Length: 175
View 1 (cartoon, rainbow, N blue to C red):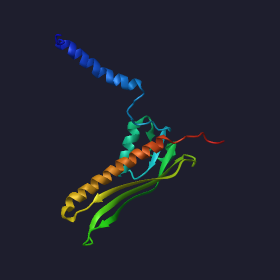
View 2 (cartoon, rainbow, N blue to C red):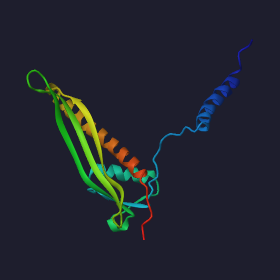
View 3 (tube, helix red, strand yellow):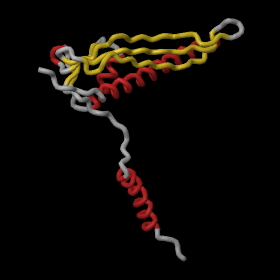
View 4 (cartoon, one colour):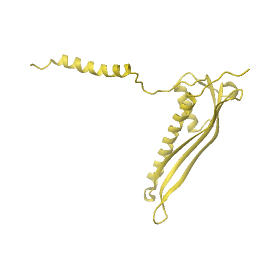
């Protein structure tokens, strides 16, 4: 039996490469992308210059047609931040009494209310934790690792917040 000509082998390879995504899409598989928010406009009750507020703004703009209002009166809903705190707690000490491990925590509490004060999302809290092994002989490296862990926690927080906002149920106003 003679080997396939090069062009036939290429066609088969190309056909196999194209068939994979078509078969995956046919079974209902879809990458999770940004979900549209169930309201037309939102006011973010956060410091305008915080990294968290900037990340939330980017996600809202990327997620769909929801507009970010500059004033609470111009928005259909407003995000009220009840608390936003970071903690660094000692988890373990070595035999000399020096810190061996920390736990980094971030807590973010919020609620979502309409223009007329009805709660769309009741007070809710997102809590994130990361463990950080510590060695005082590598102080600069551990400080950088801490910064990266907090940044990772913030990204997780934004994703969780966006999922909760997207799951909000908007009910019509009662007369």
